[in-house]
Image (cartoon, rainbow, N blue to C red):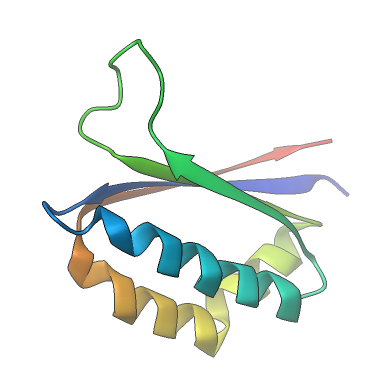
Length: 100
């Protein structure tokens, strides 16, 4: 079975980028709860290319398989994270792909 890589790009509203630390903690807590949530990394945009289209931060999450990713998406704590942090954002992109 192939792993699922879940990329989330965030555009924080002006003055809200400090919330990234709290969001990272909330997602790390979810990772610890879900056995198929293999890894989490994230941070601010840092490329000199300038192709971020206004997105200021990003996360890369790796799941053991699609089932594990789907459990994460449906988890009630994931919904709480969304409700807590979506008001701080002016844009979100989520993009998943499979890889070995």
